[in-house]
Image (tube, rainbow, N blue to C red):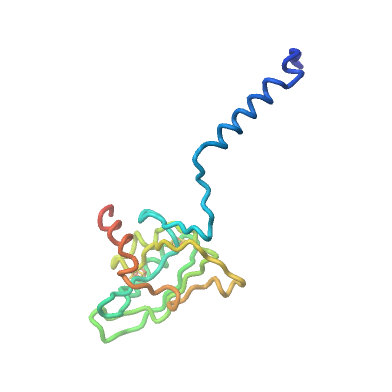
Length: 160
Ligand code: SF4
Ligand code: SF4
């Protein structure tokens, strides 16, 4: 049944005043809008940006031993790994390692399952592609020095 409006309600006066008071209060509150991209945001270590492969600073060698666990656990099948043999102690390395960033859902399962802490979630969230091929990140885009991923690696040591 339709409710009968009072005279005040029919004038909409109290509601207009209430709305204006909210607007005025918000006007004087501290601003929290970031002037992106001029003002950059540095995510905290808990943030899950795009997954990357860790490279040891001293040796320049990637930690990955091409076991394939990350590819197996990845829910949208975004990872492709192809193993090859190496003279190094680790015996195997990823000859090919690709992540399809159009598929990746930033779940972090790859990071969680990796026995070598070789794949970690970085702070990089600025991803742009102009074609589906561009979205396939190979080793040239994935390999990042451990020193640049210090925050995340320390976070994992603490909470894993
Ligand atoms: S973050 Fe998740 S979806 Fe993305 S590559 Fe890792 S396991 Fe796959
Ligand atoms: S990144 Fe880790 S889980 Fe994935 S293939 Fe390499 S060693 Fe295995």
